[in-house]
Image (tube, rainbow, N blue to C red):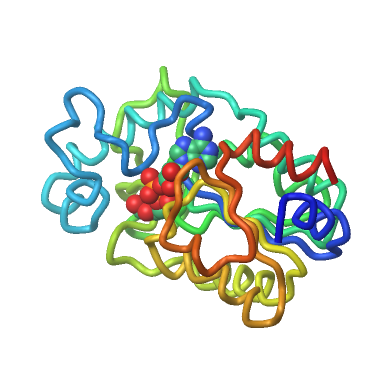
Length: 247
Ligand code: APR
């Protein structure tokens, strides 16, 4: 398969499933997950903060880390890659499904999930918090008004970041919907993910197993690359523009 074939396949596809990772938000200035941690957080690995053990050991430290990432995310804006995915959703309507591993909420802010298709956030969303007692999920206050930890408006319980941490299960309904969408997809796009974290990384094989086409967009080769139909060595925005405008 070459780029022209990939463009034709995407243009002809009735059902398109997309999996995104941190690379899609890199162009909005959000460091990818495996970039070195910044500044004072350099001495921590994400795994040392994004886990139930880390939280129950030192909830204030974990909330301090998420509150900082929350401020960064709210100061960021969706980039051309996010906008091109919303355009693709408008073209494919109810045949479009976007599963993101990103917790920055930028796809939702770009309008994904409201242009005729569906958006699921497989690993949660750091602009919301979840009550440890009753499970209530609420949006966090604006960054300038936010002092962690948030308190549940329903029961007064302490709220945790609404993130799927290492060792926790993904939201079952979202994962099931994603697996169904990738199984039914004519074309799947795997964009900006190192493809090392399952079950998200395994979604591509649901499409391949049923004879669908899987196209990767990533400046680097990944563990998935050799098994996919085509891999575009591009950034998310440049790769999507090449696939969509040349189609
Ligand atoms: N456009 C597209 N891809 C990019 C760009 C870009 N501008 N810049 C970097 N990338 C690619 C990198 O080459 C890498 O393959 O994005 C990928 C980012 O990989 P990770 O940092 O591993 O992030 P991700 O794949 O989203 O991690 C998956 O792992 O740590 C857990 O739960 C966490 O959701 C996260 C999951």
